[in-house]
Length: 223
DNA sequence: AAGACCTCCAACCGCGGAACG
DNA sequence: ACGTTCCGCGGTTGGAGGTCT
Image (cartoon, rainbow, N blue to C red):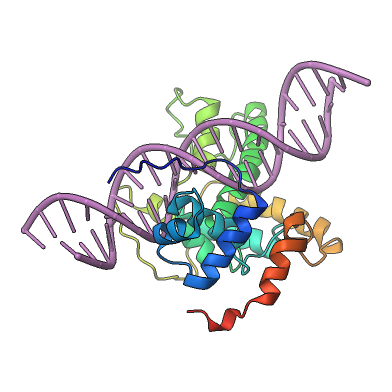
């Protein structure tokens, strides 16, 4: 069916947020197209869902990743690769988008560090580049580093089905995990001292309009 | 002080698969 | 069984704010 109405795009306004929260509370967080329609928001259902899932959902933990979470992300990513939603399900309060963003920015940094090292010593521990292929550029190296398909995918070159069993004790032989762990440990040391309860960097919006919405509504009556 | 560059993250897009009629 | 609609996922982009020179 052709969507003739003009749909709004771009950043959400406070009014839109409040409106969306109201209707999600009213009808639940399903049927996004329906919600988009009845709410009167000139947004697509998709856009509404995204806004809810990534920002408005009160179950979201906000603020900096804790060292524990970082560790989990690394571990799960080495197992599952870029299966962000799957990883997110194992980390309460974090969204796939958040984890994806985190991974991209942090792993890029690590890749760059790695790149520096490898340009200094040709026999670096960067195991991903095949030894004989000189055609692999630095850029490709970096890409491979953080866009890994994960252990499960690496183990068998061919297509492998998504087995959901979380078997512990899989060997961590992907890339130079040692390097990553070292970094994480350092990070932990630094942060342990300043690891305040999260919720620090909350949008001002939460302080007022939405905050009061949470209080006013009876969530338990939902779903 | 100001412009360039970098980082972070919200939001969009395209696609595949599930659900529904 | 098939076409349509909806949902969710992964990849990408763009802008705001921060840092560097």
